Image (cartoon, rainbow, N blue to C red; front, top):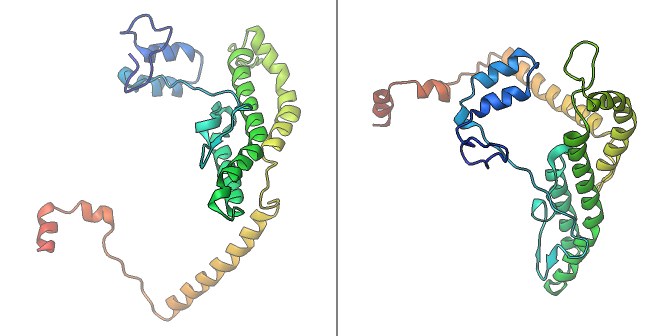
Length: 242
């Protein structure tokens, strides 16, 4: 009923129900390309993947003795802001910093508590924003109303339509300003320009060197690619090994 390992959909009263048809019913009025993809999908391959988060651990540390948790193990969050992996990376950075300052193994438990205190507020705030985004998308928003089609006709559709400029020009800028406000190694405003200048110099030097070799008559010869070799008869490969 749910494919290759997913959980069973709660509202699936008929175990033999064609889940592709159910998904198609959710996308009525969408572009034909969507229906083409769904029609080509074997029903038995459809899976339900449930999403879980957890409340912030304000009253219980992430660390106990010489052991500490990080990432989804301690602050799992909804995926709507794409921050699960990002927060795990921030955890690793802070944990590395506090351990680098640790001068003796006897100080490790205190260092791990410092890691917890340094991360709990920001990680919890990101958890809250992710849960809020998930709840709004599922419970408050719908396909926006548009004069060009008949897809968005519910009150949620009109609400979503009027909320769009507020989300685009107020909510999202503030939200992402917070999410990307963590600069442990300094601001990176000019990092792209520095990388561009570096690679312009590097590639110019290597390109000029390649042109010089070509002018001297150098010809690069290569053998068959991996894919070409794999297409050769097995007897030929065996003969070459012999």
